[in-house]
Image (cartoon, rainbow, N blue to C red; front, side, top):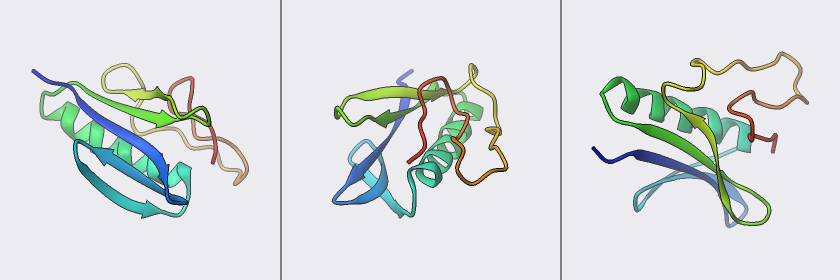
Length: 94
């Protein structure tokens, strides 16, 4: 069964999520786009599909940020506004 992949990317100055050839967004922050992408991936995982969220780094390469069945859901979000989203080991605040 194919894996559902959600790519969080900054496109034309806006944070968006790409899945296949479709985009959703824009989102006000990288953090919000990441949270929405994780919600989408969680739904796919519950439907029996492998699902993963990848985030584009400053070097334009995509790295895994959250994987269904491996990372916690719901994602733990720290209370302070300046802290990072705890999704996988490579997620960074934006």
